[in-house]
Image (cartoon, rainbow, N blue to C red; front, side):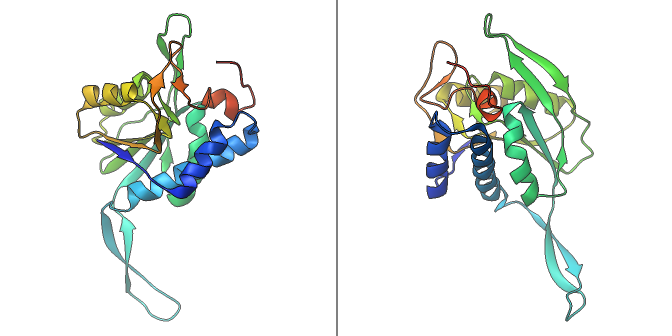
Length: 211
């Protein structure tokens, strides 16, 4: 289930990400700000538990706490840009890492890091990756989470295309939640999103190359 986040600040931030003159430090900061806005949108209807707290004035005041245990899974490298801001919103979230690389010659996907631990129950696992292109790296991460016992899984990206969206829906069903800020028109022959923003990982770490 695709959920597009329409927000004026996201539109401005996307423009900054697209601009090839944007320096890597600003690129990383802006990607984080977008993920923060999107995560707030995701969380707004999440279930909460009633708790009691003491204020400086009164004891046993009714309050609320998010019900799920949140697990954030950035797909390395580019997904790391989204985590610091996300963790500011949910400071008790656990972070697990998955490293997936695409061989640009034969287009195969290789998992070079797998730090997925088994679900302890009542978890909401959120996969972060700025770009949803073919959808294959996201699908690899999601399947690893399913195999580890996670029942509720959501994907948050910044820019996607129909090919990646449809791939995830075919793999995990139409009800699988995909959050995106922008949907671009095409995936080119090199499997880069157009107009896109280039290679998000390279740009975030100052290693931009021609694509």
